Image (cartoon, rainbow, N blue to C red; front, top):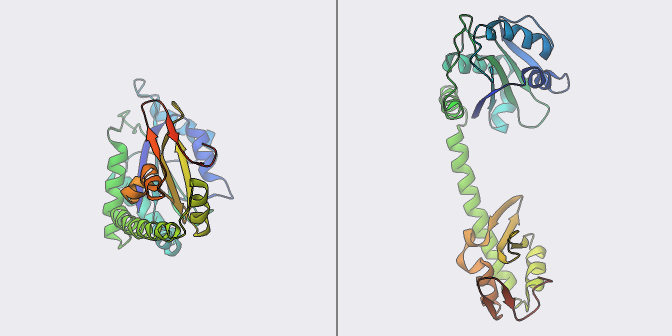
Length: 256
């Protein structure tokens, strides 16, 4: 589960987005009566007027369980998570409203809280993004949900496997002895890997190769040294000379 947080100033617009009938369903609120974003913003302002020094007076949080976790969580359970998050951030005495979005495969919670409490004291939003992430991690562990750290580990393992597979398909392509970059790119495409020759926007020089497979993109040098631009050229036995301002290639490199 991932948690994000920030201070915003466009309260009514943000809340109206979250409460759209085809997107959001309200799951909780505290000391609020309004239905529209404009009404809620006015209610927030009653407290915000007690503190004229503070700007960006609304706190916006997003809590995102993994897709499998989100599919099995009920609105009641998501409400509990929302309350725990609000309490964990120390916002239990601040006006707040929470919505769940299920319009996409990825279920997530939106929380909007008044940064100013009923006494006019401003919530300290220092490092709010990091604090949100850590709190979401703690709540996920408590409820037996997948944590952001576990998601990252799974992603790294998945990327490791993908890089190994791309390298294998590169070796298969090289067995066909491509004579130029066009042939290499087409061979890789036939193996379900898209290869892009990348140029610097400032200099126009070739800066490397980019490989995409199953929606994941990697620099060639991230996969293996031999899969960098120069490495692929060397493996194809093409002459390449790179100088400070230009890249001169002896054979056809696909219109570079």
